Image (cartoon, rainbow, N blue to C red; front, side, top):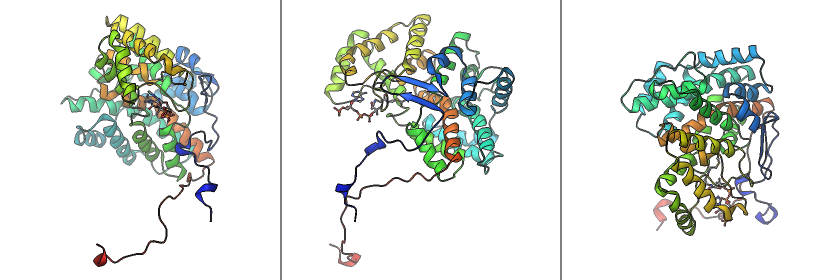
Length: 380
Ligand code: ACO
């Protein structure tokens, strides 16, 4: 019998490689992130979400005609079935991540490719879901306030349409660009908790809707996607840059974590954070609220001693303030992350299907053996 002494445990599967991928490369020590071999910095500054989603799914940058076709397919998929809007009405008082999870699960019933797990059908579903996620989040936001959802635009970009569905106002080009950048930066990230969850589900040959629904659940926790919401709350509690050092000291003294810092893979600064930092700086000045950038930078300063231990800002640190300054309520921050992540989940599910294997690790048993079964009447 194998004893637990013979077994090397990898709690949290830390440092374990479980498969190969040709989609996203991460070097956590150097702070490098590439989608399909393209630097995240090039994509964040030169690409669009639509183009990046195409790149992730199909492996190459599209030609003009390919991008136009892809964009048209995204735009065609923006409206939700009435039955799914009814579901959103029923669960409208839940957290937006719970509503998103429930609505995406319900969408499976109305997808014509539902039972088809071929690569082509999975891409078709992934493209539809990319658009539908955005509509669900904003439709729920309106419905819970007793308002009618704004019909998605047939012409605006994915990012601009997302902001448009918040209140029916077309965003400025600069605001839409920043949202677009945010979606590009969130589009995929290797074997993070939600993508791994989606792969586990796909590993059983379940369908994309099931895999993505489970991915939403994994993303909702504060150790993964939930941190942006907590960072904004922290910035509000700090209230003034002068309070940041003491706030951080108190938090760490109580052995709590500073949200938006630390990462399982990055031991250098998360390369995505740079672009959002620039966004916060610009936007806080534009909106006449420079204190938010100053508060965040004061927290970074207070956390400097932790950089030696590999604890740096992650993608969530600056994202929350950007959403806040755009008038987006805090409980929509994690759903925004999910909206950007659909292409990544889709391509990873496809990779899983292409050479599928059931993902089934082992646990070391630490309980008792050979216990005597005592009938209920004789138990004390
Ligand atoms: N603040 C203070 N200390 C921290 C932080 C933090 N944010 N993150 C890690 N540490 C410390 C831990 O206390 C621990 O110290 P110890 O060894 O003295 O006990 C050490 O660093 C290692 O921490 P682990 O939890 O073992 O590292 P892990 O890789 O499991 O954690 C995680 C990664 C969950 C992201 C963690 O850094 C964290 O909780 N951060 C705050 C939440 C957050 O920002 N989440 C978003 C992640 S990015 C994303 O998903 C998009």
